[in-house]
Amino acid sequence: MVGNFFANFAPGKSWQSLPEGIGKGVLLHRRIDDWTDNHPIIKQSKALLPPEAGLFKGVLLDVYWDHFLARSFATYHTQTLASFTKTSTTRLKEGASKHFPQGVPMVEAMDRHDWLGGYATLEGIDATLVQMGQRFPHENPLHHGAQWLNQAHDDLGLQFDKLWPEAMETFLT
Image 1: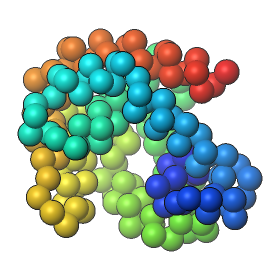
Image 2: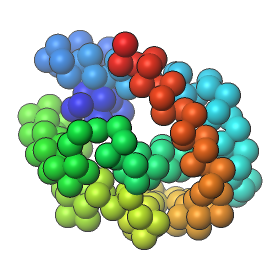
Image 3: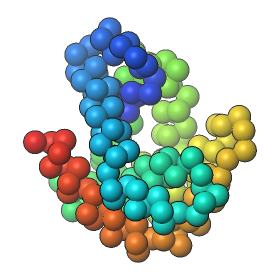
């Protein structure tokens, strides 16, 4: 989980200096990125977003998929969303402090604002995307993301329902 979450903080071959489990998480994240970048459902889903979303369509879809997963969490996990959020945040805080200190502020914001739990609601998605957008040094469209999700919610939900089982089969088997 830690390597997968912080993969963007481990460029190039730097994953090789990490503990084995974390390094494998970094590589898994890269495999998932490659798979999703080229998946027809992702291309179809990006087409559901307005042109002004631009290069942020992929970022928005990542958050939207988290929204649909959080809304139907009990369908995919035996653990409750609240319990998962608590254990995940603890693991991510420990992993950040030991291996990815540059990720500590993000995990602290995630915990403080309950990003993972908040993904289940449009209000939570809005708060998350606004906060994410504020971390960029330049103007970006993330503050419109919840509105765009709301407009395409049913269609994106159908896309998620096709994508998620395929992703689980691809990466968990």
